[in-house]
Length: 85
Image (cartoon, rainbow, N blue to C red):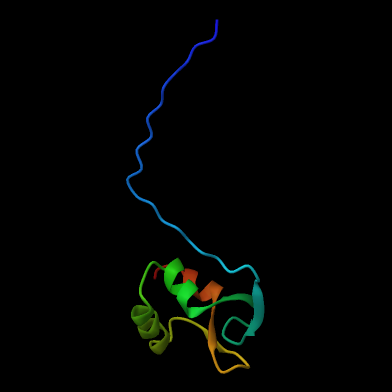
């Protein structure tokens, strides 16, 4: 005998992350190896903070900023996940 059940799902929080399609790897002098890099906006989204807070972390030397050829900058992904931060 087949039974039918009704299920109610309530969503209390919704979060959408937009990830870049192309992963860019670069040499991070602070890590001493090749790492995945993120744009400033994506790094702020991953940390769930604003671009201003991200700039403060970069100024304090807590994030590894890698300059690009075009004059911009990218953030070392590994520096976002340092334990104890």
